[in-house]
Picture 1 (cartoon, rainbow, N blue to C red):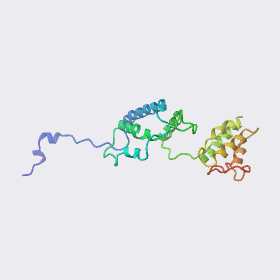
Picture 2 (cartoon, one colour; picture 1 turned 135 degrees about the vertical axis):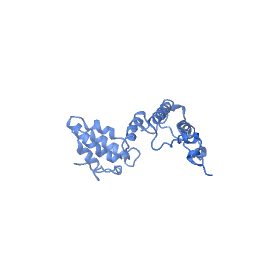
Picture 3 (cartoon, helix red, strand yellow; picture 1 turned 60 degrees about the vertical axis):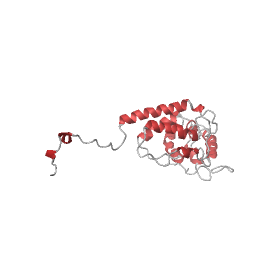
Picture 4 (cartoon, helix red, strand yellow; picture 1 turned 120 degrees about the vertical axis):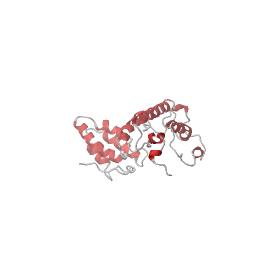
Length: 215
């Protein structure tokens, strides 16, 4: 004889269904807890970066050997992720924030640079703004400030490192530095240094992507 629902034990009838697994994004309170832990970890790294060697002291393949051959079947606790970063990632990187690292300046790994990235990620910025596009976007601000009496050099000094590491960056810095300090220098100086063929004889090419920024 088959068993009907009426014949089922009371415990079976009264049992609540198992909760469905959570879907979607991380709950806000869980995000808050992990974000606090991550910021504490980052602050500790910045405060104690001098304890690490400037350059990685690992052999080829050593980092890969510390990583499992396959990803975990289930997500790991965030504390384990941070522990893996300390154990696996940190030994294999160059520490640009290290006081003994003198190759470059003004890296985006500075504390203000890190904070500046946070809100951009929060609001879903799709992609980084390229250096050439940044020059064009900066132009209306420069125009307003010039009208208010601000010297061009006071603004273009913030643009000197825009093309750092790109071909032509040295030419960009030199030309911009020379032209922006001239008396009465205005937007036409930016136009002239981004105009193809306008560079003095002997100068190398400007970084790729630049174009005249005119009205």
